Image 1 (cartoon, rainbow over the protein chains, first blue to last red):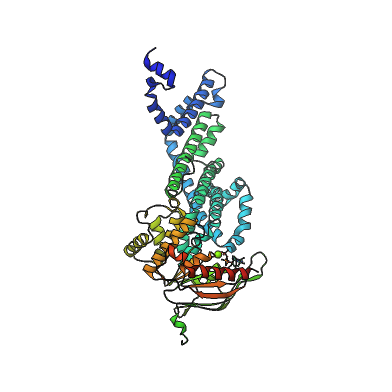
Image 2 (image 1 turned 60 degrees about the horizontal axis):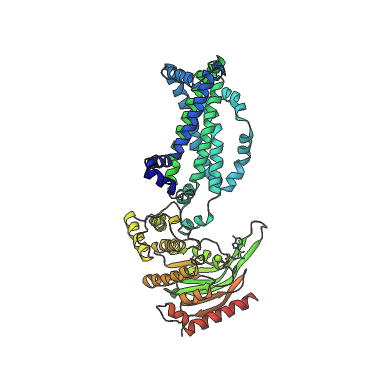
Length: 280
Length: 263
Ligand SMILES: Nc1ncnc2c1ncn2[C@@H]1O[C@H](COP(=O)(O)OP(=O)(O)OP(=O)(O)O)[C@@H](O)[C@H]1O
Ligand SMILES: [Mg+2]
């Protein structure tokens, strides 16, 4: 037994494991990423293992390796580019429209109660109606092209945007509004300097929710009467039992969603830099 | 002594009555019934009265934030009909925009009036120094203590260079020590800027310590002016002022008046 081991026994401090501290420091500063990645890797490994030992039939369940192969093949095909552009532009148009109309509408509804009373019944009716059921109607109105998909994406995502924005405006601290009023500020100045900034967290959470609904809208819109798009690709792959390709489509859409959500989070962090961190 | 012309006053209130429409019942509540008072230029006037007697209501009407249904409010010979450049309010809660830094908040009033950026910057910086917050320009409100936040609130009001400074219990949320510090600071700043000030409080010693004149409102709702007392304590005032027999006598007198109001 050498002296350092002895010391370790007495003091409980193991000097020989000093480099561990560096690893510890690395771990704690990246804890969230390391734990998250471990979870994903574990799940994928388990999935692959179950398939490899023939516990399940990969025709039904696919497997990470098969998805990878199918994914590479699909992404390098011409079909992918067309599908991606088709779905992407539908999403951009439908969700963009929902943002451009939804945020101002929510602000106006929150700010002018009379306007809210006016449109509230219409809004509640539209919100309560299952929007998937409107797909046939949209096909009649906008045809089987891009129009009907944009409409369904728009209608899927506008409600959370409007409702959250409206709540954000309604819950503004009235004391803050007295300040610009006492300086004789015009309505548009009050909007810009108080209403909009204090509603940012609510608006952004609406945008995030709306984004999720918009991605569902992409798939739902392309399930019937479509000739292109990632959603359409998934649907045809499913009908022809190409399980691997269904997963590829799922990953593309979900991955796209994750990227867009983190962009929104970046935006949120930019607006939130003044807020105190309630953890740590 | 000859009667003074009304235009010699900064602010004249003539039989002002203010009512609220209570949303719940749809009825009207006369919060202020009949308030008449005058404030001279560069005078520091405190208004005291029991809680709920309509002090904030009256101040908001002078600020132009509330309509009044009776009488007149005249500032520099012109009837008040809404908020204006000539007044600035120091609110009871600091009411700072949390997403703006100290400078951003102090600038705010000027910015709303479309002041030139360089002028705005210079004025705000000067006001931040004046209220003793130099070095904190780029902090956010949530990094400041309550006393510091009230200093920002005061600096914002002063930056717009008002004719009449309206203060609604600005120190009521502060602890006793900070409150005393802020009272001294306010007097120092007032002495430097010589703004006409209308200060609301229900702390009687605070009113006597700060004011040239203390106006006592009767119990509300439906308040009227119950008393109007001149405070002739010498300036500059300091901690010694609070031991002055004259100070103690005035505090006792006003306390008596308010107690009688409450009966
Ligand atoms: N928005 C409102 N609607 C209806 N009544 C109100 C409203 N604001 C105040 N009141 C009533 O008007 C009266 C005066 O209120 P005000 O806030 O002016 O009192 P105050 O003297 O400032 O009291 P405090 O010292 O507690 O601040 C009170 O009876 C109050 O209930
Ligand atoms: Mg009050």
